[in-house]
Amino acid sequence: MTAISLPRAAWRAFAHHGGDLSAAQRWFPDAPKPWIDLSTGVNPHPYPLPGISPEAWTRLPDSAALARLEAAAAARWRVHAGAEIVAAPGSQAIIQALARLLPARRVGVLGATYQGHARAWAAAGAEIVRVERLDELAGCDAAVVVNPNNPDGRIVAASALRGLASRMAPRALIVDEAFADFDPAESLAPDPPAGAIVLRSFGKSFGLAGLRLGFAILPPDLAAALRAALGPWAVAGPAIEVGLTALADGPWLEATRGRLEREAERLDRLLTATGWTGIGGTHLFRLAARVDAGDRFVALLRRGILARPFAEAPDRLRFGLPPDEAAWARLAEGLG
Image 1: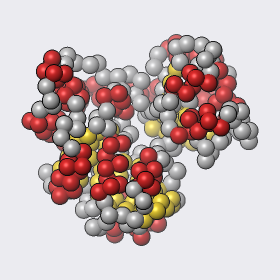
Image 2: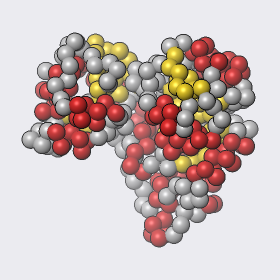
Image 3: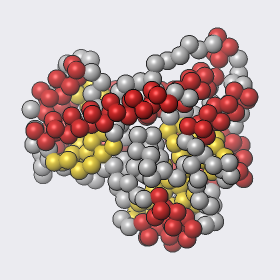
């Protein structure tokens, strides 16, 4: 297994999270342009932006419009009437708010997963326990399961999550379904069990990550506390208008699911043909391994292509989907 031949500062930037394209441009200023960012797992085919009213820019966000947005999200994910849904400026804002709101001192996190949860809880003073089996979470004050998981696409059955929630109640089970729009079979969103909090991302599925919009599905008492923690006007007016239109557009989401499935299979074939071993993924990304993954990561950077490395697994890279045929061709050349 080879090490990534980059300065430590660059390695920290790339391994912290996806999307740090500025770091790639800084360390590799002579790379071909435009850069191809495959590090984020965001839909490369964004929802077509609707017209945004001038009032969305000039007035404070309207509370009635926010309520309509939350109702549209509840309808999209078929949320049961007993749960409440809260909109926020991205699911990361919800993750950080929950770490401050919930009285949990020992927080279990299932497997290697999105690190934002552990960082938020650690910043709030909690002890983080990383476990490999679902049943190991039952003894914690709060538990986190990313489902489907990022970065390997592991899916935990909804029945197993319901069983865990019943064992933990009234302690909190946080189920992060950021990538569940295109893999919804095991979603808890329609009817969360007691003690469960379900997170949903808007930007990943609709390809509008810069809009900063996310949702939490949770019990009414905790919903009120989360709204208070987020403060007034938490969601911008333009985000409300775009979200209202996009969440109601079921045909677009279904057509996009089919397109992404075909492209993910194409990425599988390309990775296999160039010596990578597939580990897993979702409709929006693939995780693959090679003994020399570190060297291949640097080689891709030199070609203006940013993938996602992992400090704890230097033989692996995660690849998002290229946005167009030119990007596919450059990735094939870079991998080859």
